[in-house]
Amino acid sequence: MATLSPLGGMSPEDRAFVDAFRRDVLEASLTQLVLVRFTAEWCGPCKQLAPLIDKAVAEAGQGRTKQVVIDIDQQRMIAEQFRIQSVPTVYAFLGGQPVDGFVGAKSEREIKAFIERLVAVLPPTEEEVSLDALVEAANAILAEGEAAEAANAFAALAEQAPEREDIVAGYARALLALDQIEAAEAALAALPADSKDQAVHQARAALDLAKSAAPAGELEALEARIAADPADHQARIDLANALFAAGRRDEAADQLLAAIQADREWNEGAARAHLLKLIEAQGFSDPWSIATRRRLSQILFA
Image 1: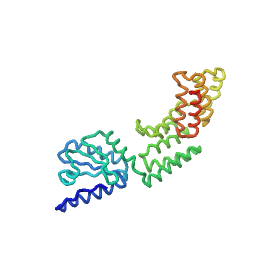
Image 2: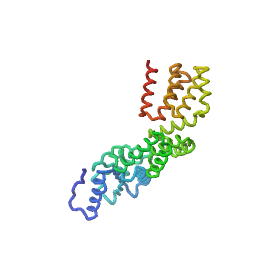
Image 3: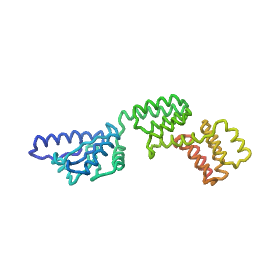
Image 4: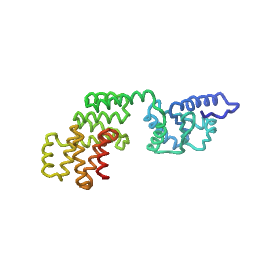
C-alpha cells in the first residue's frame, strides 16, 4: 500500500487530512477504484471537469468507484506529497497504489473510457456474481423455449439493475420470442446506439430478422418458388428467415448454405451476410452457431 511520507510537526488539521486520505483513498482502493481529483476554487477547468467526473463515477456504480476531492489550497501537504504542479489533476488508486492519472480537462467520453478500463480489472462483487447467475438462468429459460417466463425474469432483473445492457437485451429477445416485435424494438431503443455489449448486438440482429421475416403462411409459396427455380436465391433468403423465426434453424442454414454453394457472390454475397446475421442473432458461442460456421467454412475453403 502507498504511504504518505511522515512529516514532523503536523498541525491537528493536517493530521486529520492525512488520516482521512489513508482511510478514504489508500484503504478504500483495496476493494474499489478511487479517483482523487486535485482541484482549487480559482481553477476554471476544474469547475468544467467536476460534473463530468461526478457523472462518470455515478454511472460506474456504487461500490465499484468512488471519488475523493482534494483542494490543493486547503490540503497543501497532500498536494505537495504527490507533487501536484497544476490542476485539475486526477489520480486513480487501486490496491493502495496510484495506477494511472491525467492532468487537465478531458471530454465525457474520455473520462468514461478511463474509468471503464480501470474498473474492468476489479474482481466482481458478491452482488454482481449473484446477478450474473440470475442472468444466466434467465438466458437458460429462454433457450429452453419458455419465453414468457424468461421475459418476466429479465423484467425483474432490469428493475434491479437498469444499467445492465445485457439484461435489457435479454428482455428484448424474450419479447421477440413472444412475437412482440414493437415492444422489443422499444426496449432496445432505450440502449445506446453505440453499445459494444455483445448481448445487445445479438438482440438487435434478432430484431432485424424478426422485422423482415415472411409470415409463416408464406412458407409454402417460398418453397414452391425454389422448387420452380433453384437459383432463386432471394427466395432462399426469405425462406431461411421465416424458418429461423419458426425455430427451424437447421433448415434455415440449409437454404442459405445451398445458395452460397451455388453462387457465393450473388448480390454481393447476400446469402453469406444473411447467414452471419442468423449466427449473430443466435449468439456466436451457441453450439448451433459454431456448427454452422464450420459448415460455412467447408464451403468457402473447399
